[in-house]
Image (cartoon, rainbow over all chains, first blue to last red; front, side, top):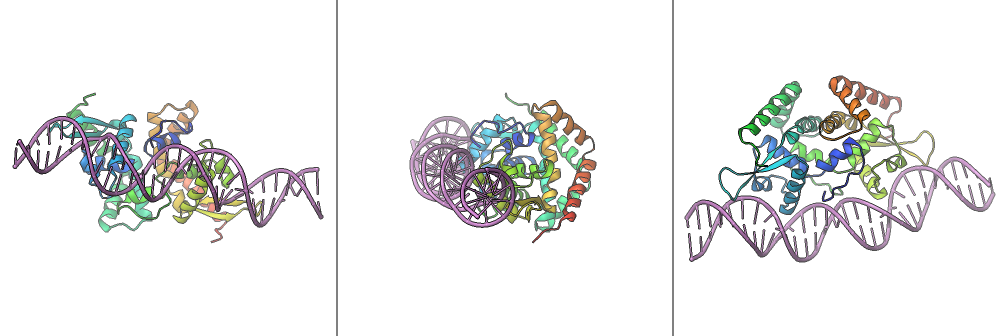
Length: 144
Length: 144
DNA sequence: ATTTGCACTTGCAATATGCAAGCAAATTTA
DNA sequence: TAAATTTGCTTGCATATTGCAAGTGCAAAT
């Protein structure tokens, strides 16, 4: 995950070079579904990512244009992370992972129900949430 | 990747414990799209996986019920690997990764065209290929 | 003025990866 | 039928990545 080089020209391989590790998609999940947006928010997630790994992943995701850093409205010590449109477009992938996991893992009933609900009209759900997330981007423009 | 423990109860986290690394999905891709089915087939893929890593990934994927080992019809020295239904059901995830990569990477025109074609009627494409792959399973039953 | 919160960095031990070589069993070749 | 080759690994070892704990610098709160 610390390297730059592309292993092949395969689209899947290239994608995995961006988010194919044990942590990146969890950070993206937190941004996408759980309104987490600061370094400490991510640190506090149930999986317990190590602080140096978190820093390295945030750097990588930013470099790859999946997330971006903004000054936080509340304080100068805080930094606000958010998904770019490129990051938001990962939603369908993550949804399909949820759908797969719902079929093959034992999950708490409430989570199972939520996934089944979203699965019923996948495209609608994806479009709706994508729209919401992208709309939020226009409220506060990037500093870059 | 050598470990067993679940990091959390999150469906996404659990899924990443199964295929969230730089190699597993590439092996699955080879099984799914490129008719690769033996150890040497995977070794020869463009990305150049190391032999010990390949062995470890195959073991992991088998343990997690994503692939299975069969005796090869051609020879007793050969082993035939194939996707289980659980592995085949990863298709929609992989398709969405392809679709994402088509939007954000520069890809060869022919690959781009193929992805766009599949995207046009995603569900149909997925159902069709899933059916084909699952049908093949019935031709030769598992030895397990 | 001091403590606290936030976003990291640093050091170091443990683990995972990548590379090359080796190995046993089955098959092919000479 | 003996030797070479193929196949699917394992082993050893150097390097890279991870995980954990502690530390740092700046802003804000007390």
